[in-house]
Image (cartoon, rainbow over all chains, first blue to last red):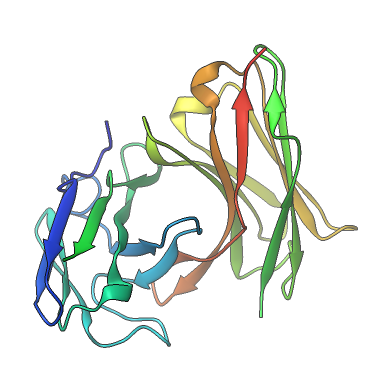
Length: 110
Length: 124
C-alpha cells in the first residue's frame, strides 16, 4: 500500500493527451514538492519532472507537471509509442521523515 | 557524467544480512551538495525508499521507519562508494535494489542518477 495514490493504468493513442493523477496528504504533497519518474521496461527510473513542474534538460516539453493542494498531475501531450512506461510520483513526507512514492501508473500507447 | 555501479549477491538466506555496494564515478561520496540513497522495488511494495547517507562536515544518515531497526548505510571515501546492509532479512525483502544520487534542484532535491539495480532474492 503506497502512501501516494496513483491509478494503476492509463492509455491513449498516438498524438493524444493523457493525464496521470497522484493523490497524497498534507504531510507530503500538501507541504512539499512533487517529483515524477519514468521507468521504461527493464530499466531504472529516470527523473522526468522536479519541483512540481520543472523539466530536467533532455525531457521534452510534451511532459507537463502540476500540483494543487494535496494532489498532483502529470500530463503527456502528443503521445508517442516510446512514452509507454511506468510513471511514479514522489514527495518528501514530513510525518515519516522520508521519501514516499506512488504505486505507479502503467501507460499503454494503443 | 555520473555513473553508479552496484555490486553484491543476488541470493540471501532468511535471517541473514543483505549487503550491497554502490561505486561512484563522476562525483564524490563526500560531496557537500548531494545525498546517496538506497531504494528498492517489488511487485508487492512498489518503490520504497530505504535511506540515505550524506556528508555535511560530518556524516549523516536518514532511514525509513519501516526498516530503521535493521538497516545501515555507510560511506567509504577511500573507495568512493557507499553500501547498504539490511539485517534479519525475510522473503518480504526480496526486491530489486537501487542506489541513487539525490541532487538539489533549487529548494528541493530529486533522484537524478540511479544504479542499474540488483535483484536480491531472499530464499533458503
